[in-house]
Length: 129
Image 1 (cartoon, helix red, strand yellow):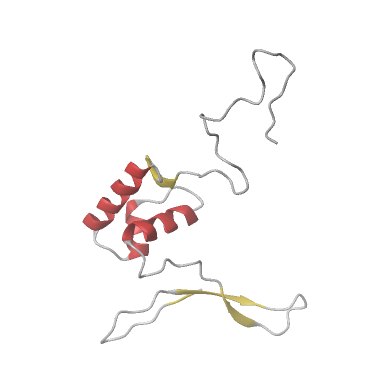
Image 2 (cartoon, rainbow, N blue to C red):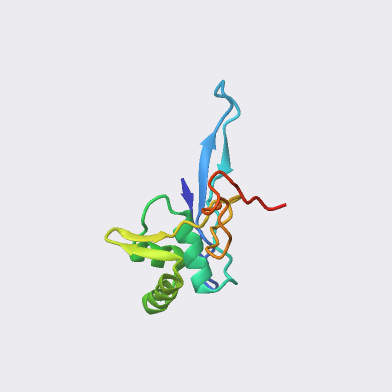
């Protein structure tokens, strides 16, 4: 269930997703807020767009991004192009996807590092001390 509000003199707040839940026995039914994390309105449009794209389970269309972020199509296009140039997102036939970063806890390979196995001395391993 989605709750939306309107206001004559001010911008409407973001819609709120609600779910009717109850105990396993079916008693004490009540509403719980289930809204997804919304981007910080003080963040740049690029940051907000990236957050939405990263939170999408599948590629998200430009139209859906525009509706979610409530922004001008031209400004959104500029932000998406900037993110694309930075390598943060890619455009597919079905929409925009975030480029997955190195998983947390893993270090990205640094080509300047010495190899762990010494090619001159087979069987020798160069581990940092």
